[in-house]
Amino acid sequence: MFPAVHTVGLGLAVVPGGAGTVLQTGGSELLSNPWFYAGVSALSLLVGSAVGIWVSPARRWQAALLAVGGGSLVISLAFELFGPAFRNIGEYPASGYFLVGIVVFGALDVAIDRWADDDTEENGVGLWASVTTDGIPENAAMGSLLAGDFHGALALLFGLAVTNGSQSMMSGTNMAETHGDRKTMAGWAVTAVVVSGAVIAGYRLLPPLPNYWIAAVRAFAAGAILASLAGEIYPDAYEEAGPYVTLATAVGFLVTFLL
Image 1 (cartoon, rainbow, N blue to C red):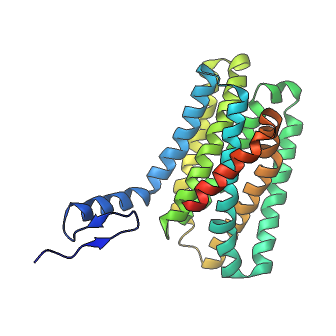
Image 2: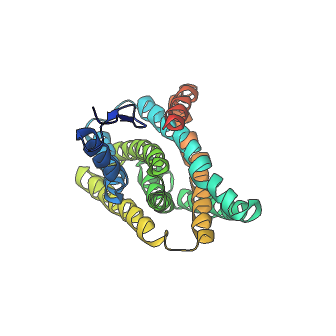
Image 3: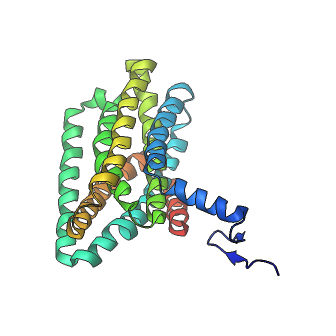
């Protein structure tokens, strides 16, 4: 008699006690490890800024990639952050925390825009500051998702990695022209440390909280992401890529929905 064969979600046949079980277990352990998410988040910023500094791709391609990430984040903020909060603590509390996230980070983006005069905005420092501040609640919420099913965290990771990578690329291209290569990489290295630290903090500090406050933080983070999409990501993407942003957004939306 042959041992029973079971199928898993990836479409692989797994024999209990065989190599397939080991592969499946190893993959699950990696995708539920907060250090993996922290590393990918940091790496996307470092790679994006390095490409922006030393390769400088055409702006329309950078903007198209930014729109892909934006479409991805629409799915994540709705299904992985706001939707569960809405069900867990009710429509009014969840909506309230969601609106607080929009107001706080919308106001913060406005403040950064006012601080970043035309020269500062042109050389990419304003975008760097925005990514650094917005990345804290986004990545903390992603870390908190790892306490449950990692698929939601994986979908959010895809959107954040693509979006932050393309933003660091656009900013890196401009910052290098006025601040030099080393200072630009150092600035984005600081941001990489901040966002990776936010992932670990979210993983360690949020799950022990009562369910109400976990839901509140996720609803707040959803609002912060939406504020970033409306105030920074889509305007920047459309300015550089025009109507191609529509198709790029659809690609990001579909890929993340399937994830």
